[in-house]
Image 1 (cartoon, rainbow, N blue to C red):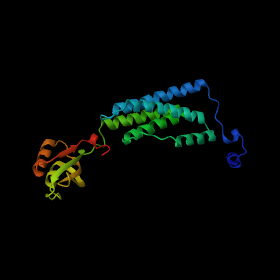
Image 2: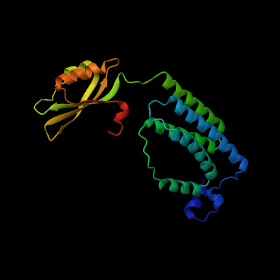
Image 3: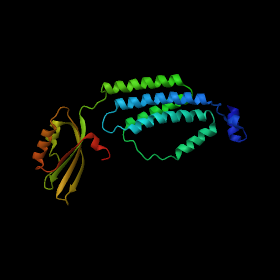
Image 4: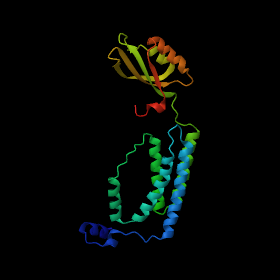
Length: 237
Protein backbone atom coordinates (compact mmCIF):
# COMPACT_ATOMS: atom_id res chain seq x y z
CA UNK A 1 0.00 0.00 0.00
CA UNK A 2 2.83 2.41 0.88
CA UNK A 3 4.64 1.65 -2.37
CA UNK A 4 1.42 2.28 -4.25
CA UNK A 5 0.97 5.73 -2.65
CA UNK A 6 4.64 6.60 -3.09
CA UNK A 7 4.43 5.74 -6.78
CA UNK A 8 1.42 8.02 -7.28
CA UNK A 9 2.84 10.94 -5.24
CA UNK A 10 6.31 10.80 -6.73
CA UNK A 11 5.17 10.10 -10.28
CA UNK A 12 8.26 7.91 -10.78
CA UNK A 13 6.62 4.52 -10.42
CA UNK A 14 6.13 2.27 -13.41
CA UNK A 15 2.85 0.86 -14.64
CA UNK A 16 3.14 -2.15 -12.40
CA UNK A 17 3.45 0.04 -9.31
CA UNK A 18 0.27 1.93 -10.11
CA UNK A 19 -1.61 -1.20 -11.05
CA UNK A 20 -2.11 -2.97 -14.32
CA UNK A 21 -4.89 -5.02 -15.77
CA UNK A 22 -4.37 -8.74 -16.18
CA UNK A 23 -4.10 -10.15 -19.67
CA UNK A 24 -7.58 -10.64 -21.07
CA UNK A 25 -8.13 -13.41 -23.59
CA UNK A 26 -10.72 -13.43 -26.34
CA UNK A 27 -12.47 -16.36 -24.74
CA UNK A 28 -12.73 -14.47 -21.43
CA UNK A 29 -14.26 -11.46 -23.19
CA UNK A 30 -16.73 -13.75 -24.96
CA UNK A 31 -17.80 -15.29 -21.64
CA UNK A 32 -18.20 -11.86 -20.03
CA UNK A 33 -20.27 -10.52 -22.93
CA UNK A 34 -22.44 -13.65 -22.96
CA UNK A 35 -23.15 -13.62 -19.22
CA UNK A 36 -23.81 -9.88 -19.07
CA UNK A 37 -26.07 -10.09 -22.14
CA UNK A 38 -28.13 -12.87 -20.54
CA UNK A 39 -28.47 -10.93 -17.28
CA UNK A 40 -29.31 -7.77 -19.21
CA UNK A 41 -32.06 -9.59 -21.10
CA UNK A 42 -33.47 -10.86 -17.81
CA UNK A 43 -33.58 -7.27 -16.53
CA UNK A 44 -35.17 -6.02 -19.77
CA UNK A 45 -37.77 -8.80 -19.65
CA UNK A 46 -38.69 -7.90 -16.08
CA UNK A 47 -38.99 -4.25 -17.14
CA UNK A 48 -41.32 -5.21 -20.00
CA UNK A 49 -43.48 -7.59 -17.94
CA UNK A 50 -43.93 -5.22 -15.00
CA UNK A 51 -44.30 -1.97 -16.94
CA UNK A 52 -47.63 -0.20 -16.72
CA UNK A 53 -48.91 2.59 -18.90
CA UNK A 54 -48.63 3.56 -22.53
CA UNK A 55 -45.09 4.93 -22.41
CA UNK A 56 -43.29 1.57 -22.73
CA UNK A 57 -40.19 1.89 -24.93
CA UNK A 58 -38.55 -1.00 -26.75
CA UNK A 59 -35.47 1.18 -27.20
CA UNK A 60 -35.16 1.58 -23.44
CA UNK A 61 -35.39 -2.21 -22.94
CA UNK A 62 -32.63 -2.73 -25.52
CA UNK A 63 -30.58 -0.03 -23.79
CA UNK A 64 -30.78 -1.96 -20.52
CA UNK A 65 -29.22 -4.99 -22.21
CA UNK A 66 -26.49 -2.97 -23.93
CA UNK A 67 -25.72 -1.01 -20.77
CA UNK A 68 -25.14 -4.19 -18.79
CA UNK A 69 -22.78 -5.53 -21.48
CA UNK A 70 -20.89 -2.25 -21.94
CA UNK A 71 -20.31 -1.74 -18.23
CA UNK A 72 -19.03 -5.28 -17.77
CA UNK A 73 -16.58 -4.95 -20.68
CA UNK A 74 -15.34 -1.54 -19.53
CA UNK A 75 -14.80 -2.72 -15.96
CA UNK A 76 -12.94 -5.77 -17.25
CA UNK A 77 -10.72 -3.61 -19.45
CA UNK A 78 -9.94 -1.21 -16.60
CA UNK A 79 -9.11 -3.95 -14.11
CA UNK A 80 -7.02 -2.43 -11.32
CA UNK A 81 -5.33 0.14 -13.56
CA UNK A 82 -5.74 3.52 -11.88
CA UNK A 83 -4.84 5.52 -14.97
CA UNK A 84 -7.50 3.78 -17.04
CA UNK A 85 -10.07 4.30 -14.29
CA UNK A 86 -9.43 8.06 -14.21
CA UNK A 87 -9.52 8.21 -18.01
CA UNK A 88 -12.87 6.42 -18.04
CA UNK A 89 -14.27 8.78 -15.39
CA UNK A 90 -13.10 11.76 -17.43
CA UNK A 91 -14.72 10.40 -20.57
CA UNK A 92 -18.03 9.93 -18.78
CA UNK A 93 -17.92 13.47 -17.39
CA UNK A 94 -18.08 15.00 -20.89
CA UNK A 95 -21.04 12.90 -22.04
CA UNK A 96 -24.26 14.87 -22.16
CA UNK A 97 -27.45 12.86 -22.01
CA UNK A 98 -30.11 14.61 -24.04
CA UNK A 99 -33.04 12.43 -22.98
CA UNK A 100 -34.28 12.98 -19.44
CA UNK A 101 -36.05 10.09 -17.71
CA UNK A 102 -39.21 11.30 -16.09
CA UNK A 103 -40.07 8.01 -14.40
CA UNK A 104 -38.05 7.18 -11.26
CA UNK A 105 -38.70 3.50 -11.98
CA UNK A 106 -36.72 3.77 -15.23
CA UNK A 107 -33.77 5.21 -13.30
CA UNK A 108 -33.92 2.23 -10.94
CA UNK A 109 -33.73 -0.19 -13.89
CA UNK A 110 -30.73 1.70 -15.28
CA UNK A 111 -28.96 1.28 -11.92
CA UNK A 112 -30.05 -2.38 -11.94
CA UNK A 113 -28.24 -2.94 -15.27
CA UNK A 114 -25.17 -0.98 -14.15
CA UNK A 115 -24.81 -3.02 -10.95
CA UNK A 116 -25.20 -6.30 -12.85
CA UNK A 117 -22.56 -5.18 -15.36
CA UNK A 118 -20.17 -4.17 -12.57
CA UNK A 119 -20.51 -7.56 -10.88
CA UNK A 120 -19.84 -9.42 -14.13
CA UNK A 121 -16.94 -7.11 -14.96
CA UNK A 122 -15.13 -7.93 -11.72
CA UNK A 123 -15.66 -11.66 -12.23
CA UNK A 124 -18.43 -12.15 -9.64
CA UNK A 125 -20.61 -14.16 -12.02
CA UNK A 126 -22.45 -16.16 -9.37
CA UNK A 127 -23.14 -13.11 -7.22
CA UNK A 128 -24.40 -11.21 -10.25
CA UNK A 129 -26.78 -14.01 -11.24
CA UNK A 130 -28.15 -14.38 -7.70
CA UNK A 131 -28.62 -10.62 -7.31
CA UNK A 132 -30.41 -10.27 -10.66
CA UNK A 133 -32.73 -13.21 -9.97
CA UNK A 134 -33.62 -12.04 -6.45
CA UNK A 135 -34.21 -8.43 -7.51
CA UNK A 136 -36.27 -9.59 -10.49
CA UNK A 137 -38.47 -11.72 -8.24
CA UNK A 138 -38.84 -8.81 -5.82
CA UNK A 139 -39.94 -6.43 -8.59
CA UNK A 140 -42.40 -8.98 -10.00
CA UNK A 141 -43.85 -9.66 -6.55
CA UNK A 142 -44.33 -5.95 -5.78
CA UNK A 143 -46.01 -5.41 -9.15
CA UNK A 144 -48.28 -8.46 -9.06
CA UNK A 145 -49.38 -7.81 -5.46
CA UNK A 146 -50.07 -4.14 -6.26
CA UNK A 147 -48.17 -3.02 -3.20
CA UNK A 148 -47.91 0.67 -2.26
CA UNK A 149 -50.87 1.73 -4.39
CA UNK A 150 -52.47 5.06 -3.39
CA UNK A 151 -55.94 5.09 -1.89
CA UNK A 152 -57.33 6.84 -4.95
CA UNK A 153 -56.36 8.27 -8.34
CA UNK A 154 -54.24 11.39 -8.56
CA UNK A 155 -55.55 13.87 -11.13
CA UNK A 156 -55.51 17.56 -11.92
CA UNK A 157 -58.71 19.57 -12.16
CA UNK A 158 -59.03 22.83 -14.08
CA UNK A 159 -62.20 24.85 -13.54
CA UNK A 160 -63.17 28.12 -15.22
CA UNK A 161 -65.44 30.51 -13.30
CA UNK A 162 -66.82 33.97 -13.92
CA UNK A 163 -64.80 36.90 -12.61
CA UNK A 164 -67.57 37.98 -10.22
CA UNK A 165 -67.58 34.63 -8.37
CA UNK A 166 -65.70 34.22 -5.08
CA UNK A 167 -63.57 31.13 -5.70
CA UNK A 168 -62.53 30.61 -2.06
CA UNK A 169 -64.23 27.43 -0.84
CA UNK A 170 -66.84 27.50 -3.60
CA UNK A 171 -66.28 23.84 -4.56
CA UNK A 172 -65.28 22.46 -1.14
CA UNK A 173 -68.52 20.55 -0.51
CA UNK A 174 -68.28 18.71 -3.83
CA UNK A 175 -64.56 18.04 -3.52
CA UNK A 176 -64.94 16.65 0.01
CA UNK A 177 -67.53 14.13 -1.21
CA UNK A 178 -65.56 12.91 -4.22
CA UNK A 179 -61.92 13.28 -3.15
CA UNK A 180 -59.68 11.84 -0.46
CA UNK A 181 -57.64 15.03 -0.57
CA UNK A 182 -57.29 18.14 -2.71
CA UNK A 183 -55.36 21.38 -2.82
CA UNK A 184 -55.82 24.58 -4.81
CA UNK A 185 -52.52 24.98 -6.66
CA UNK A 186 -53.07 28.00 -8.86
CA UNK A 187 -55.52 30.80 -9.62
CA UNK A 188 -55.12 32.76 -12.84
CA UNK A 189 -57.17 35.05 -15.07
CA UNK A 190 -58.06 34.10 -18.62
CA UNK A 191 -60.00 35.43 -21.61
CA UNK A 192 -58.64 38.99 -21.15
CA UNK A 193 -59.37 38.92 -17.43
CA UNK A 194 -63.09 38.19 -17.75
CA UNK A 195 -62.72 34.68 -16.28
CA UNK A 196 -60.76 32.91 -13.54
CA UNK A 197 -59.11 29.50 -13.95
CA UNK A 198 -58.68 27.39 -10.81
CA UNK A 199 -56.24 24.47 -10.81
CA UNK A 200 -56.58 21.74 -8.19
CA UNK A 201 -54.37 18.71 -7.53
CA UNK A 202 -56.61 16.04 -6.07
CA UNK A 203 -56.89 12.36 -5.20
CA UNK A 204 -60.23 10.94 -6.28
CA UNK A 205 -61.87 8.27 -4.18
CA UNK A 206 -62.02 4.78 -5.64
CA UNK A 207 -65.21 3.83 -7.44
CA UNK A 208 -66.66 7.32 -7.81
CA UNK A 209 -68.73 8.37 -10.82
CA UNK A 210 -66.51 10.91 -12.57
CA UNK A 211 -69.34 12.11 -14.80
CA UNK A 212 -71.51 12.87 -11.77
CA UNK A 213 -68.52 14.65 -10.22
CA UNK A 214 -68.05 16.87 -13.28
CA UNK A 215 -71.81 17.47 -13.61
CA UNK A 216 -71.99 18.83 -10.07
CA UNK A 217 -69.02 21.09 -10.74
CA UNK A 218 -70.73 22.36 -13.92
CA UNK A 219 -73.78 23.35 -11.92
CA UNK A 220 -71.60 25.47 -9.65
CA UNK A 221 -69.43 27.17 -12.29
CA UNK A 222 -72.22 28.06 -14.68
CA UNK A 223 -71.38 25.33 -17.21
CA UNK A 224 -68.05 26.93 -18.11
CA UNK A 225 -65.02 24.91 -19.16
CA UNK A 226 -63.87 22.04 -16.87
CA UNK A 227 -60.84 19.79 -17.52
CA UNK A 228 -59.93 16.66 -15.57
CA UNK A 229 -56.43 15.57 -16.53
CA UNK A 230 -55.51 11.88 -16.37
CA UNK A 231 -52.20 10.79 -14.72
CA UNK A 232 -50.42 10.31 -18.08
CA UNK A 233 -51.38 13.86 -19.10
CA UNK A 234 -49.78 15.39 -16.02
CA UNK A 235 -46.23 14.73 -17.21
CA UNK A 236 -44.51 17.95 -18.07
CA UNK A 237 -47.40 20.15 -16.86
